[in-house]
Image (cartoon, rainbow, N blue to C red):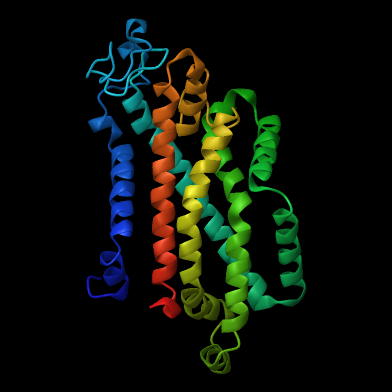
Length: 297
């Protein structure tokens, strides 16, 4: 790995290295939140209203017990960000994986089979592209809330959110893979595999898929930031995860209610964490796009 062109390109880009370090710090903080967070912000037994609305430690009235201050319920903002990032990252990464699997499968099927199959899949993709992704997610989330039992909605809300975001993002993968498949299926190595009687499924998975996966990885990296932002947007609007298990979007929504009362830290710090995470992931996606493009080497 350390002798590859990818690693050489990574080492030669200080911005990419910095973005990777920041992303790893945020992801590590989210994964190990139960061990490194100063407090458990979602354990009612550890909360006290006497600690509510404390400012950050460097302001007058602040305390290093709560480095970034507390919210209106006495929850430590730093700990809430670490725990909230876990849910945001889980929903975003799961949605990207689901969208990737769905889009790559449909793209391979459309490009390989062609004909009516290709037409149907691409017309569905065109219809989906005529609507904003956030509107599709809102529609799916609203239908799920109307169909599912009310007492079970809180438990399955993250999974509904994952499905809603994934169904909003699959088209990019499908169209990219289809275009690459249409080019690759007419090349000599595919024709040779057909001549010697290799099963079509083995040709698609063993020959075509490895040659069309490069652009998909770039899209997935960039879409991770978009999925996290979409989850935060839905949670901010109140249609995402429940307040009992808040994400970064829920924390921003809660803090927004107190923004004009002078308690700016409740919403600013979760918003900054979300922006930094999205920026770091986008920078990594831009680098990966350039590193995997042979024309730019």
